[in-house]
Image 1 (cartoon, rainbow, N blue to C red):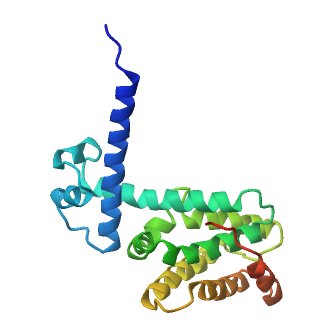
Image 2: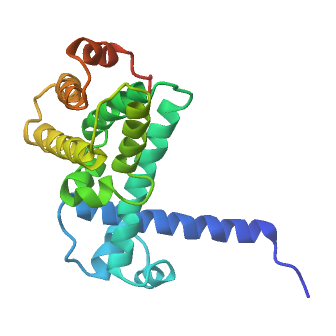
Image 3: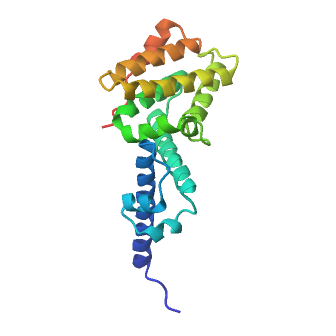
Length: 212
């Protein structure tokens, strides 16, 4: 039996992956606009792919939208992991992650709208969202006596509420300074976690990574 040309397979795989990315990108655009009551044809038209190709990747629209949310979560998680790699202080890790997350709303407004429109399903999904990372860092910071939190779930409620309302504020007031506002909210969150005002200021004053 003749063997398939590896180059042909590779091209086919690349086309398939690109089609999936296009569908997920279209779904994210629709979610950012708050438009999920659409047809498969609407989605494939926006993605510029054949209507029949949809079902090579997703069984339902709901499955696609779930994948679109997970893509946002994974991208966000990978970015935070890259920027906090090698840090030994969990309080610094938490602070930097929160400050970076706030700044992402202006840097990637369309994906930010997915966060705003879908809230906790983005923040808390699996092991990749903001809240699982925040839980990890808060628990580590409490163990290291950097934070004070007798109830981690209550602490996470403060963190998640602050993260979502910060996103809403930045979208509602496009002229507002996102960096200064994010750092001000971060200071309030740190104080809620038992950090002194001076130490919160010191953590926020640490430089953020250069992300180009």
